[in-house]
Image (cartoon, rainbow, N blue to C red; front, side, top):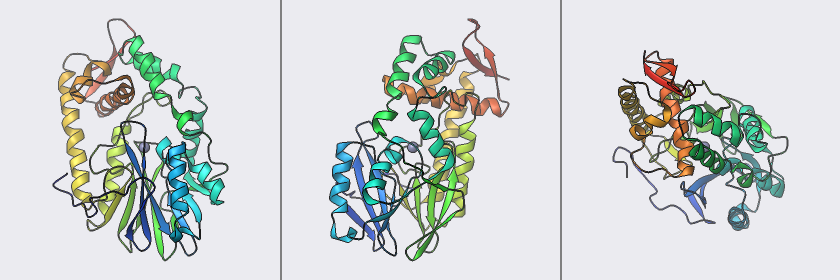
Length: 342
Ligand SMILES: [Zn+2]
């Protein structure tokens, strides 16, 4: 447990059960078949029916859970909206199924939906070949790069179909749900146009993946945007949460609901500053992203973890490169990208 945060609900609901956060809010948790282990989903009471926030991955276990929940007497008025924070499979995977079953339209930001489409179709830049080439360019040996790119390419299995004609969510949009106004807060760096939802009158923030109490949000560079600086974008985005009162209850997609926004934002900044300093130090002599992995991850990485770790390593290097602290050069093989003190 994080000693600087308070966790008012230490016992998460079992899969297929609902936990009552308050009269107008329910917490659902669904299992995930990978290291992340679970995702939290939320139901907000509307004037008639409920608004679901996020949907789980598209598999039988998720749908079994949803069928149980939708059969609960509290939900006899059904769902009237499915709000998706971002395109990642644990959030958007089951959205179309849920939307069709409940005749409830999906709401998602434009860039999240477009990115989901690109990944689903394995468009150029989002396909395993591009990913493998990008990882090799950043120093990962070819066999490992091929394997990591393949392991990372499971999107279409977890998102069997995309939402049809979703409604578009924008930053600072107000959603009138039941008795309350929820305002969207855009964030980037983890995904292109992530939407958190803030209810100021009841002081509740549905933070999605942008503010998690235990793990740190994945921030990575991939070949669709090979020169981007998502870590700067992420650190700027989480600053926005500092304008929210600390007495706000945060409902994250992974881990337990918590109080302590400002402490968590500070911890995340310190976490990345420490890692940036270690990476910068290593780059006294030219290093590729592959060569700085040990500075960021002090454990063995399997192929799946390597997919995320390589993206994160490039993100840390790009932050320092964009800040002018490091220069990007070609290694002695004339192919691999390396970074060194500017
Ligand atoms: Zn995510």
